[in-house]
Amino acid sequence: MEVAIFDTYVKRREGGYMHFDIIVSADTNYESVLTFGNAYLKSRSQAAPIISSRDCRFCHMQETVPSWEKNIQQQGYHIYELEGCR
Picture 1 (spheres, helix red, strand yellow):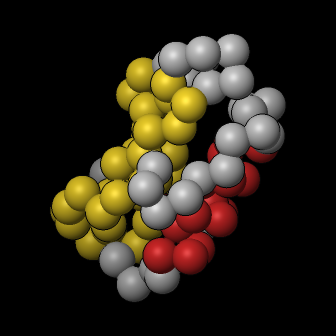
Picture 2 (tube, rainbow, N blue to C red; picture 1 turned 90 degrees about the horizontal axis):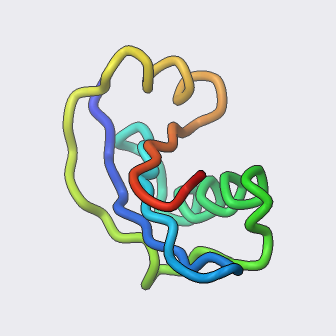
């Protein structure tokens, strides 16, 4: 499965930034990517920030990793946490 990776930076309520990738199947529309990102923020108790097009940008396409594919099949996306997400 080929996936699209969107590089995302969101300012945290308590300061600093969260940096994570939103990984989706290659045919997912951009509005869904933003919706998935906002669902992730809500799950992390970061409900105040809203992801916009300036926070989330297409990065590249690649073949999926098996651990990502399971999440993509179940919920439509996978989040790869990079910085400030914990």
